[in-house]
Image (cartoon, rainbow, N blue to C red; front, side):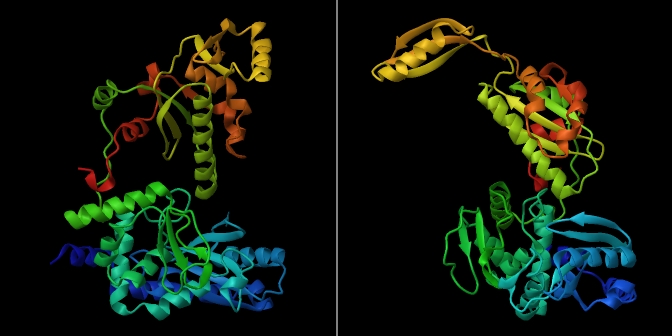
Length: 446
């Protein structure tokens, strides 16, 4: 048995599992149809997602759309759609462009999403309105053999950490994985093509786009030629997938599909790994109750804001990382030097630009920060000035209140734990610090 046959045997639903899925879908349809709001409105149920397309793995999510007439006001669509979802499956209200319900029925996670029923994908009124068109396109272009190839590609992406278009992963959506197999025919041929991809790779099935895109990967949506299906794929996720494809073709292994669970380094291993490294500082906080897309978006903004602050004040950030666990989130920053000397050289204009030169001289000759100068060197005016901040962690702590780190994270600034290099092993999460120092890919875990 080949590796891919073995993997397929583990990820493809059995006949009993398929029966359970079908029974659950019928139960869901019945529950929705019995809600008073559904009976009162002109709404069409539309099953979308991998189940509708026959490309699902074991334990799939059920994605049910409630299609409203375009004449229905947006506010009513949202109110009625959420009410139907709550009554049908309970669950919680989530929010993308507009609210929808995430619940569960018979052990299967279920999304109930209101949308408009349109005649053409380009007429979309909300971001999800084109989804039924995606579903029909895949059903029309995928045969039984291709469905298993898609399953293999999805599991490969899951195993390599590149599956999912949400902000947490910034990777390949299920729809994009299906289009790739339609384009290339087989799982192996998709990987062979991916191993040759370059940044800004352009792929299309129906027609070449009329405009340029600047994304890491461009795959033109065959049902909406003005949309790049691959726009959520970040540059790093794109590069990881290209690398994973190359590595798998060189040495196929089930670990690309089912990587071993990550085992954090021991305290002794962390201490040994840190010896040749630069200074590391961190921030730790309890995760507020936010949905993933909002939380991960704001964590990314937080990390970028701190990096920018440090760089602006001459603290060279070698790299940074954000690590989310069940009970806490840790931001870590490796800095060339967490402490800087009081004195720094500040460059002024060339001497022959007289107006700017005089402004520079006037500004600095009576400045409290001036240590020496102004003086001329290499044809430019320079001064030696005193830094306001010589300690990286103090800089971050004293400036945190003025940083915009996201609407929700701004509210928890008083509850942040600031961690200096000398206490990083005691106060930082062992998992976070381990992953920060250990950059192995998932398939390389022992």
